[in-house]
Amino acid sequence: MILGWSLAAERSTDSDWAAAIADMVVKQTDGREIVREIDLRGLINLIPVEKLEALAKASILKNIKELDDAHPMLGLLEAYDMPWSEPLARTVMTSMQRQAGKGHWRLMRTLPSFGLRIPVSLTETFLKGWPDDSKGWETWIDQFCAVLRFRRDMTEALRS
Image 1: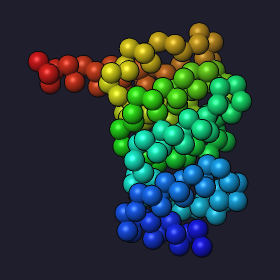
Image 2 (image 1 turned 90 degrees about the vertical axis):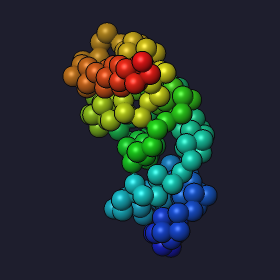
Image 3 (image 1 turned 180 degrees about the vertical axis):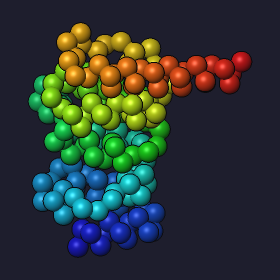
Image 4 (image 1 turned 120 degrees about the vertical axis):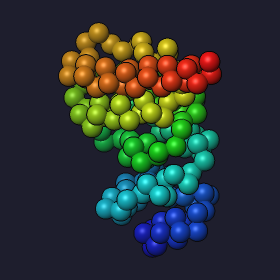
């Protein structure tokens, strides 16, 4: 039934249903199992950034439920190809900075693509704040920072 709702929400471009399904994916283990095999990109991209932001804030909790490879929010964030709001970027990236250096391989490999979604206004904020002991993450952090710098430089050049 959930699979049918997912397909119907995507085909009808119903953002409320898309947000409700995303909420279920994050909060219910059974729901994640059901939708594991389907591509949620079309559905996830229907969700207004404010709703995704609220879901991230509710599910990524400092020192309680940090963003990691197994966190259900990670799959949604990977699939969400839209620009992020500042609060969403802060929620996600501060959790990632707290996790840097830990063995979260999937999480660290998302960094460069997340650099494409973060508002340019937060470039300076996320160029720093990475722990010195981010062993194994160095390449991914460097790529992430390069993407942020490039986007900032391009934005400044276009404004000139």
